[in-house]
Length: 591
Image (cartoon, rainbow, N blue to C red; front, side, top):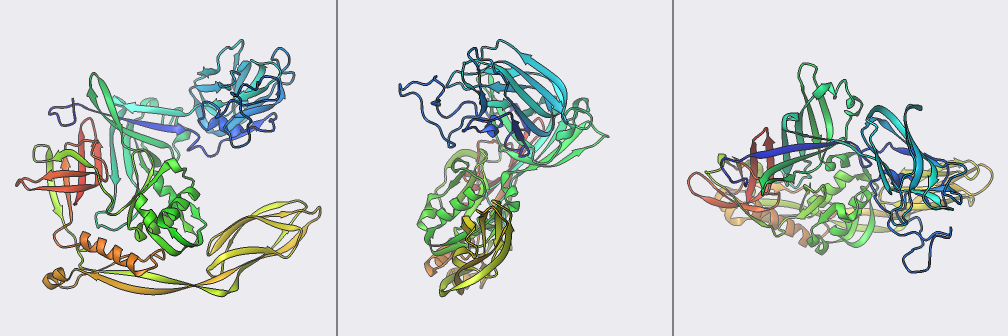
């Protein structure tokens, strides 16, 4: 069966993750002791095996080339401070305890070090509620590297693992995993409906960042959401993953529609249905601070975008940036302290670019004019419910106003911030400081030799650094931040479509200014892109049809109206509505 078949059967399901390492930022650990290299937090971060076969000094490693020396850059999990005896028994049993927001424990996993072949033999797991032991599971004579327990208990706030015996004599305990995510899958009668919206760019054609949204209605079976085991977990930022599926070759093949995070729960006592709404990861960036980009000569938009995303907590495999941004160089690039969201908006304006999340939970920065992939899915009268062509005043312009900037640096140093700090004996403190004026090449100086500055990270209007008192007595120091003053000169150009002006008169559009646009050729390029895009007769076409999740944002497709006129469009928006059947709203702009 395919999505084009009529009749057809479409399947839907929604996975909600109530607790995992990504969304449970409040997890902490306590240990009986640690080896010199030990990473207790890794036991709940989802790792299943260490990155290396660790070379240890306990007599269990050989020089055969299969072992590697380790440092704090490797993934190794928790290594206890105590060593087991000649038979693997610990004289003083080591333990690790995890603390978290109150949650039910359906299952719990314990994994040793699979690369060394070491694991706990005799151990106990205690489940606690606010320090009081609710249940204890005891395991003896274990011979497996991975053990899964299923206690099925509610309202747990911490879990402690205590190891009495290890599989290897004269070795520390090595635990790679001591955690289990809590999630549920809703489908069939447990799922009333869901709606998912994904957007490449806004309908008015502006280069705004777009955060996708979804809503879902779930059955409140046994009142589990307001009276049962999930009642304490209906909090913000729970992870929601919707899927659509079709049966192929006897099995249902599902397509993921993205990852969302709950921002509202509606639990009514007058109905059996619970409604949850969520947004994608981008909206979180409105509350994350970006310290800024220090003034750098000839940085590319690609370099700046990478810096923003990395400082926003994204790893390189969590974003994709158009390589064409490497060709756009900014003579004297800088950005002030702002939010990650607003910093990305500057990239969108200077590109110009589209910024959105894809279905694999990656940030996509896509430059205008980048080549697109054609999808042979066609929307036509045979599968379409409605067709609307829409041209608004904000989408039409024939005179584009674009600003660009000259950046000048003063030769003299300017003192832009000063603060007096008192530190106790050998005390360290992290400092964040805003400037009174924007400066380049900022540096910090302490007037007290006993108080040292380290980890200085300076932008043009703010900085972060660490102070440490290296003496055994309290010390006071004045920290002064100085740099070269920055002056900006604004220039304005107009890029016009003379033929359109002769026909319709002047209709002006002002592109949002960005200090990353610093020469006339860059400004003219933006103007040409917008002139071509906003010329008369374009606009967007919105079709409501039977739907197919294989049509993705940024792909081109053909859309035929009821009069037989076919246009090739780029997909800018999809809204999927599933209630046992599938309906999709797609908005496209003419290529």
